[in-house]
Image (cartoon, rainbow, N blue to C red; front, side, top):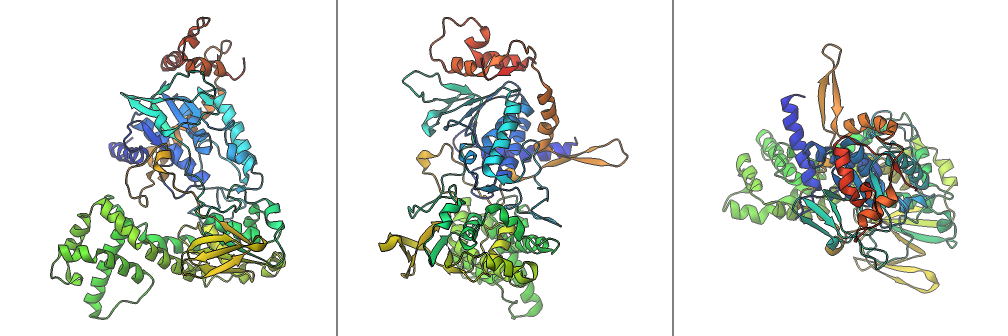
Length: 613
């Protein structure tokens, strides 16, 4: 590896660990990187593989080290196997339920796909067969209902866990105050199911894989949560001539809308809505990338991450305005929706600019002075600007996405006559959001298209407005009161607001203040190049997956150094957690099992494992 690659990868690994490290902790990390965006299974697989690579690259974990993972869903399983495969680590999965992937195993009505939440559709995209760009080293799953996907994951997990020092402790909920650090160790005080004493876990690292938080339900509605949605009985037992309000214009809101609008709809049917060979993926990918440049400015790199994207964009827009005025005199440039964003940022910064440049016209401030002004703003001040101008940005981007989709004629790409025959008779659905159109920047490209299709149906309408309260009235209906003082009555009200924020006291770990838009370093794809045996041909190595991919087949063939004398995992866990020594234990492997196993692995001894005595 070239020296320049080594230096570059060191910086990338540090950025990833900085994003994932819990505030006030040295050896506690988050599998999500404390992000509230891009939360699909595939996104989490990418984060997990990158976190495992970064921990190894910066020597935070090595052979024989012990890692506790709190949470036994997709992230926890991905982390456990990747750590054990890539770094020969001992891994404990601490799961509060009685089984792994508990939330998904019973969800035969929920459809999971690698492509539907992708931010990159690519040329020739077709949801029925296109391979996902984020190909993982392990757990390369196929689209299907949640229970089937979870079952396939557990079968693959068992194949790795049977060969590796991965121990699952079920019915084990970890409270935030149960975690402490001492010297170079993390101490986890577990709660015993009975009054029996339990020895604390002492590990080298802890990773919080508890997910993105509970589903938000600020209105306290019994509205069939995201996890319950999809059951046909929910939709087939509406009263005649029903009115349904679906509040929330994100990815899950769109799918909920389709369930109510289309009779006998199933989530997997969305693949039938994609028009093949129509070039729609190019319109969406290119158009949405251009529209989102306010929040994902390329100039963040030029400022080495010291400026949030909105202020980078603001500086760029000022350069454009000054160039235009220089070449066109006093004439203003053509107006578009970006003007409202620019005006909002200008208004928010006006007081600060007046203080920094007293008595000067802001339009005459040179570019270098303007740059110095915003670079002097603290991150807290920059994020305060973001919070203030966020609604204006959301509105402007909503209008731009609607304008992008307006020329796309659904009738030319889909058989609308057939679709309209399948509409749920007598049902009106109102989609509710905060933006001027139902299109939001949080929609994946695929769901932008689905929203465009649905808004063309006669039984679907959009209403803008914040819901401030609801009340049950006679006949089982719900009155919805909006922020403008108006109200409306619906037979059913459903909210899809995504993950909610946990109270700080209930968060297992908390992240440092950062700008999440240019971040998500854990979703990066760092690579380096190596020569091949062919002249002038180099191969790109993706660091996040390379080591796991190379070692996984070796692990699968492993029989153990002494297969006739395996480690029994239930006995290992029982003796490890036993508070008082067992006087009848004569096997040195179980007197202090964690210390024995760590030393064995570090000396190249790989025991065989069994789950049953």
